[in-house]
Amino acid sequence: MKKIVMTCLISLSFSSLAAQNELYDSYEVTKNMPVFYNKIKENMTFPMAWGYEEDLAFNDWRAKARDVLMVCMEDLPPAPDSYNVQLLATERRDGYVAQKLLFNVSEWSRIPAYLLIPEGKGPFPAIVMLHDHGAHFTIGKEKMVRPFGVADEVLADADDWARRCYDEQYTGDYFAANGYVVLAIDALLWGERGRKEGPNYETQQALAANLLQMGTSWGSIITMDDVRSAEFLATLPQVNPEKIGSLGFSMGAHRSWMLAATTDRIAASASICWMNTTEHLMTATNNQNKGGSAYSMIIPGIRRFMDYPHVASIACPKPSLFFNGTRDKLFPVEGVKAAYAEMQKVWESQQATDRLVTKIWEEQHFFSKPMQKETLDFFNKYLR
Image 1: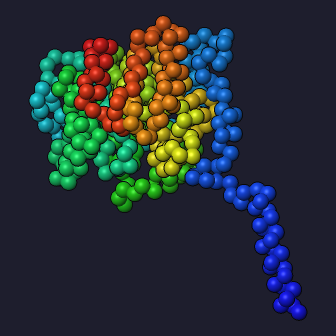
Image 2 (image 1 turned 135 degrees about the vertical axis):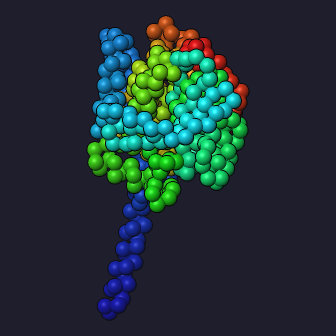
Image 3 (image 1 turned 180 degrees about the horizontal axis):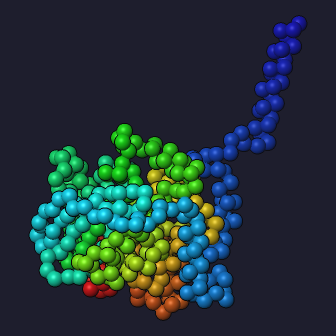
């Protein structure tokens, strides 16, 4: 009799679960997204976007928006008391000199960098050259400047990356050969600032979580290291401190427009293949929802105030260039167009429409030689 009762109870239990499943879904996360993600997006009003407060003058908005951005960036590495530059090696190239050096990018970090200096009489315009993510951590600055004095496998790695992403052309060397001082550093976790135990994709999540638990964030440290790099460039006798630009592809593009928004040391910026809106990036099917690689570009809490193009617009009315591709699977074209429209409204409001270049190429997630040539022309127009 007991056995029969137990069997009946189990049957009732399964029947009850089946009935419940008809009433509601037994999950609330799908494809790494909460099922209510559209409700979250509906609540994102971006109250710090330009024009939201109708009576706020543009310069007042710009200062207020930058303050909000800096607060969201949280506990930041302090500026160094001294850069304490140490020259490690030099190589003469066609029309410029390549240097590898060490300097204090903050009170917390002493880092290696590549510095390219054109031959001739300066001071020269300069570019902070910002490397990509690519889920490829063994090299960083070497993606932008052809390395020297390195192991054969490092050089082969860099040459392969230049082929895969930059049309077989090192962007840093290209700009140096055309008269620009170029500085390239490793972002935290890449290249010579990488993981002691070796590169590992999952390290991104742990690193980001650990920094958040200590009151700061990975994306904020990357941005502030870039700010300090621009400040360092401005101290060099070979550099015109009023003519410093920033340039990056992919994550480097995000770094570039963040840098231009964060400091007025940057006079002009170019951002290749990284601009969109939260509406189009945060969906159940977009690459962004995988999460891992996004950690390096997350500023905690900023979406409560501004979307990506609103943050980038803090740079207005500086000359700013944005390129994206029609076949770039990471950044939906409709989102690119929406972001461009938001920025165009800001530059237009300041009678600076001609200083904002937005273009969609028939291209993949790639920085081709023709794109590099147009980017050089852009900087020549504003920094020469």
